Picture 1: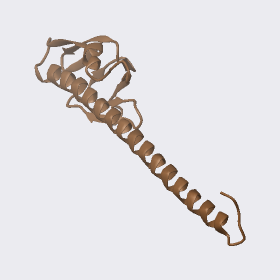
Picture 2: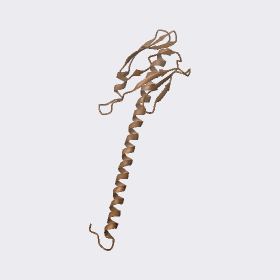
Picture 3: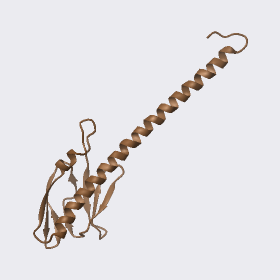
Picture 4: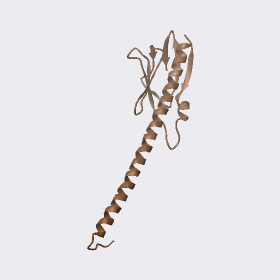
Length: 143
C-alpha cells in the first residue's frame, strides 16, 4: 500500500478499517450473547434448587406433626454442577412478611414461596449441607 497522487492509499485504509470494525463488532456481540446464556443457566439452576428446597419444606408441613425428611443439598447440587462450571449457592429461608420464602442468593436472587409460615431454620443453608427438616406441632424446624 503505497500512497500515490490519486488518494488510493486513503480509500484502501478506510475500507480495511471498516472491515476490521465490522469483525470486532460481531465478536463483541457473540461474547455478550454467550455471557447472557450462562447467566440464564445459573438462574434456571437456582430456580430448580429453590423449588426442591421448597418442595421438601412443604412436604414436611403437609404430612403433619412428627414427619421429617433429611435434605442433602450437596446431592441435589451435583446435577447442577460440572468441573468446568461449578454451581454454588446459599439459600435463605425467611417468613418476615408473614409468607414463607426460600431465597437462593445468586445474581439475580431467586425467590420461591412456601406453604408454611412458621419456620425455624438457620439463617443460611449452603450448597454442601445436610439438613433435617421436621414438623413439630405445625412448626417446620430445619437443623
